Amino acid sequence: MARSEQIMKTVMLMLSSLLFAGCSVLGKRSAAEPPYELLKQDGPFEVRRYGPMVIAETILDDESYGAASGKGFNRLAGYIFGRNRSKSSISMTAPVLQERRGEKISMTAPVLQQRNKGGWTMAFVLPEGFTLASAPEPLDPEVKLRELPPATVAVVSYPGLHSSANLEKYARQLRAWLEKQGYHAISEPKLASYDPPWTIPFLRRNEVQIRIAPDAS
Image (cartoon, rainbow, N blue to C red; front, side, top):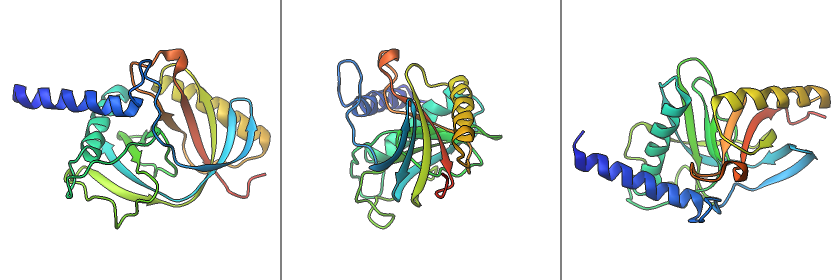
């Protein structure tokens, strides 16, 4: 890779990180999030109802959480910063979604990441008002647009680092809570991260999310 190309990629990542952070000194982001109805709250656990939304997603073959995160974020940041057919910039929302390859992303809000055999999937949620027809067409063939249907989602929130280890740790807690409450999980857990890498760990907002049957009680 030419040095100039590497520099441009580094600059893009820095700019996208600033956008993701909402330009806060501490790195706490202020970007819009998809609206939802809060159905239940129990400490760090919540059940939310999301409406339909449009996402830009990419599939990564990397087994490593870190490698997939960096590569996926760069691809999707390129799309929202103008690497699309209309060369238009798109406001970023939170969270970024990342999941293991092989599982459909059933809901988006931060960066969601989910584990499965064969790699990971990462997605950005497009701002309210975008449809598949109105969203700019990606120029990168590795970036795809998709519309997600309404979904009922259980969430557990936690501060600190977003990592595959924390995905597993908090997924166990969320599954145990779901069983106790009588909810029926219908997806694999996804990791949702809302803040940029330089945010002070204890100020970071992360979530593990699992889609549940809408008629759960």
